[in-house]
Structures are given as C-alpha cells and as structure tokens.
View (cartoon, each protein chain N blue to C red):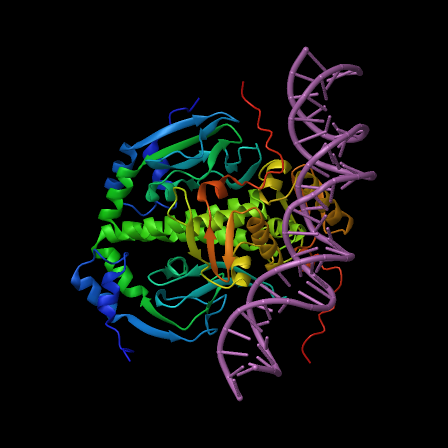
Amino acid sequence: MGKQIDIGRVLANLPLFQQLRESEIANLAAGTREIGLSKGRILFQKGCLLDGFYVTVYGQIKLAFSSPQGNEKVVSLVGPGQSFGEAVMFMERPCPVMAQALEDSRLLYIAKRGIFAAIDHDSAFARRLLAGLSMRLHGLIQDVEDYSLHSSTQRVIGFLLQLASTPASGSVICELPASKHVIASRLNLSPETLSRILHSLIESGLITVHGRRIVVQDVARLSRFDDLPHSSCAKGG
Amino acid sequence: MGKQIDIGRVLANLPLFQQLRESEIANLAAGTREIGLSKGRILFQKGCLLDGFYVTVYGQIKLAFSSPQGNEKVVSLVGPGQSFGEAVMFMERPCPVMAQALEDSRLLYIAKRGIFAAIDHDSAFARRLLAGLSMRLHGLIQDVEDYSLHSSTQRVIGFLLQLASTPASGSVICELPASKHVIASRLNLSPETLSRILHSLIESGLITVHGRRIVVQDVARLSRFDDLPHSSCAKGG
DNA sequence: GCCGCGCCTTGATTTACATCAAGCTCCCCA
DNA sequence: TGGGGAGCTTGATGTAAATCAAGGCGCGGC
C-alpha cells in the first residue's frame, strides 16, 4: 500500500529544497534513507551524533529532554514537511535531546554529504539554510521569553493564539497537535495546571473544549485576557 | 588615543573570518561601521530590523527581553570577539531582544551585503556561519533545559562550573562577568535568591566569594553537590 | 576621614505552581 | 452492551522561589 515513495519528488516539494536544481536533488536523494517509525518508537537518544538530518513525511515526532530522574520536557513537536537535526549535524556535537514518534511516522534521513554539496554549488540554498536555522533560533528565544517572563496562563493563551494562527479576531476552531499531557510539557507546566487553566478560560467564556478540539470564541478578547487580577495601568499623565 | 582602529585587521582576526581571502575581508571592511557605546547606552531596542550584525571589539553587551511592566530578563552577555545579531539579519524579522552596553564598548557593525557576497564566493565560510548559528541554538537549548529541569541551585552550580571552564578537578578562581543582579537575571532568578544560594554554597565549603571573584574549592565536589536532600539512588540490582 | 549611594545581604511573608491522591469520562474492544 | 484503561479532571496539600522590607558594607567623592 504505497510503502514505496519517490524520494526525489518528496524532497523537491519541501520548502527548503524547492528551488534546487534537478541535479542537486538527485544528489541529495542518493544520500537519503527512508525510515518508518511506529508510535512510541525512539528515533535517537540524547547524546547521539548525526551525520545528516531528518524530514517528517507524515506522522509526528517529539523532541524532548529526559532527565535521569525520569522527568521529561518536550522541546518541540515536529509535523509533516518539517525538518529537525540540522543544527546537530552542522555542529558536530552530541544531540542535546531525544526524538520519539508520537504517531506512526515516516521520515527521510538526508545525509550531510549531499547537503554540503548543495551548499557548495548553490549559495542561495546556503542562505535558505541560514534563514531556516535563524528562524529556529528565533522560536527558541520566544520560548525562553515565555518561560521567563510569562505566567502559566499567559503561556497557554499564547499557545492557543498561535494555533489559531489566522490572527485578526472573531472565533476560530483549532486542534491540539498532541495529548494534553504532551502539550503541558511543551509549555513547561504540569498536566494538572494545564487542565485548571483551560477550565478557567472556559469559565470566563473565552474558549470551549471538546477533547483536543478547542474553539476560541474571540481571538481578540483572548489575547487581551492577560491574567491580570487588577487592571490599574493609570500610568502616564 | 588609538580611537582609530584598523577594521580590516580586526575582522581578519575574528574566528569567523580568519580563513577568508584578503579580497573578501576588504569587501566586508568596506561595509563595516565602527560604533562606540558608553556604559548604559542602548544599541537597539526589541523590534528593530537589522541590516547587518555586530561584533564586540571590547566592552560588554547585554541582550535582554524587557516586558512592558519593566521586568527584564537577560538572555546573553557578549564579550570581546563575540558577535550577535546574525540570526536577526538572516531572518529579516524584528529583533526579539534589546541590546545595551554594560561597559564602555566598541563594536563593529558589518553590513549584510558583504556577508552575502562572502557566502557566494566561499562556501566554507557559509558552513562556518551555519556551524556558528547551530552552536548558538545549542546554547539556547541548554538554557531551556536548565530553566525547565534544574533547580535554582543547580543552575547556579552549572554556571559556576562553566565559568571555571577548565574542567577536571581541584580549585579554580573565576570572575563573574557582570554584577550579581545581571547574573541573577541571566539565570532566571531573583538577586535575593542568587545571594542566598551563593551563601549556602559558601557554608557548605564549596566556594568562597569576594565581590565578583569566586574561588571554587573543588570543581569535582561542586559538580557532585546536586542540591539533593536525600541520595537514595539504590536502583539497579 | 567622613558622607552618600549602589549593590548586596538577610529575614519575614506570600504566592504560583507542583505534587499527591482520588475519581471521572470517553473510547476501544469484546 | 458492558468492562477496562488511558487520559483527563478535581481537590487538598506542599514547597521553591518571588516579593517585600530593612539593614549593612564597600567604595568613590569631597
């Protein structure tokens, strides 16, 4: 049932590779391996070296820290069309996180060799890689800001607003990309706390929740609901 | 008094540029501006676009978030020879942090144009940029792990161990790169908490502190002092 | 030498969130 | 149609670290 996929075509459709020449794509494809991963399977452990990076074709991969005490902190959820591991590949150091499939997934593993060749032959591609890594960095900085400066409720609201990407205002339906347990970890809070926060947002009439499906009644109002107990901003005169 | 510096020579000595050809260096130098900044001055605010990036020649720059409520969170301290702003430049999006001089400083501002030219002409340079950004990403991931999984005490210890870079063991003298207030923010804790933690480490005989100068009595012992109240790791049979 | 001002320390109190401990609910599967 | 279990909820309790509030100490200026 369609197990065999056309690696070249899949690669050529990824944003990162879309503008590469045929020859470069072929070169990449030659160094690309297909990987099937059933739900729950671990792709690599923290500490591994990578001689290439991964692209998710379908399914979902979780990147997470795991402390010796068994605690776990989800850093990133990777979905179809997204890649991961580039930084570890370029850095040539042990990977700081582990990767695990949250669903049955299919990945491509693209060897460093072809990437380096493409960089050599196409500097626009190099720039796209640089821009991609920069965006990744930006996302991480956002996370650090969130963890450092925002309350749990603010983080949850921020996450919901991001899901309801179509900004503007009005009501939006969105779906949690994973179980609440995983989302909680991603947001650096306990499952219990996430539950309580969602329910407080429900009580405030800002959202409704059915399983993973969340309806944001009014995006603008949700983004205004800053968790403030008192709105005494009478500064400036 | 030596205000005039030889931009080309300074550039050529930076790790990032060391292996570039003369012609590329000259090209970069042509698009480079020198910037003097006295202590406390703000280089750019959160939200700025950058059409180049910065290298610190001497002095020290603080990169930080500043929330509307006036809270501040230090993300990074950058010292001589280090650069910042590359990611923002490649990303072409507003900068997520502000930059402020903690000491009288001298910087170089290197225009994107020359960098892009160098990428086009020297793919090894492109790879060095990629490796550099990857390392930056790695550092940030480490921070996220620290904030999410480690206690305040563990973060402080981790920071001290990093300062006392020469790993191994024995006693090491190191110096805090900024005031305790700034270090506390960098480590995501209040100045009071940092003070208390340092004093508890002193009481445990692990370090001594004189102003910014800290003596780590025994690196190995410090890294073992995990903050654990009980060491009941009787697992494995 | 003395004053004044940051910077740091120290203690008392508060608080946001985690943890612990039951239950509940939905859904899969028999 | 009913049983079982994962995932979620809900309440009670605990706690790490923030905040609030005074002092002390060191250092540079006069």
